[in-house]
Amino acid sequence: MSTSSGEVTSLLLELKRGNKEAEGRLIPLVYKELRRIAASYLRRESPDNSLQPTALVHEAYIRLIDIKEIDWQSRSHFFAVSATLMRRILVDHARANQARKRGNGWDEVSLNEAILPSPERAPDILALDDALNKLAAFDERQSKIVELRFFAGMSEDETAGVMGISTRTVKRDWRIAKAWLFKELSC
Image 1 (tube, one colour):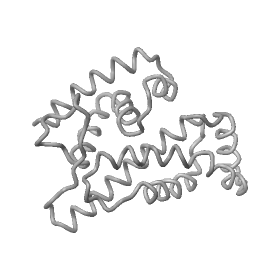
Image 2: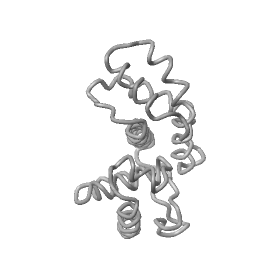
Image 3: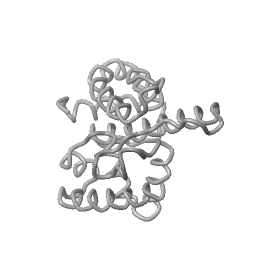
């Protein structure tokens, strides 16, 4: 994440105030990172997934710039919200596919070795989303850490910065959350 945090934050605030020129300056600054996040998400999808990183970025960006009530705090905050929004888009896409297929052939999402229950039983995006929602119900911070680390591909330090907690807390919660998800997705 090399772009100046202050520049992106400033443009986000200008955009919120209605400055349409800010959007034209913001897109080139955030596009590469949004595409990296989208590609990270889609690597965990089934190979026959019809979504491409560019389409996911465009859909997320359209939704992001329409959100007027967010008080953008920083560049990292923007990318954290972007990652959450991309997850929602993928879940909606998976649900639509599931509805079309009447429950057969759900898209699979492979998880890293620490979470994956077994190579032959990778949880699909809907099962993972349900598990993360359950985790959030009793520990929202751990759920957010999983989202930022696993889906947005943020480092422990970046995650700590976005969440306003220590790197040590991120490491501890990441370990606990992976263990909980392993158990939840193994059932």
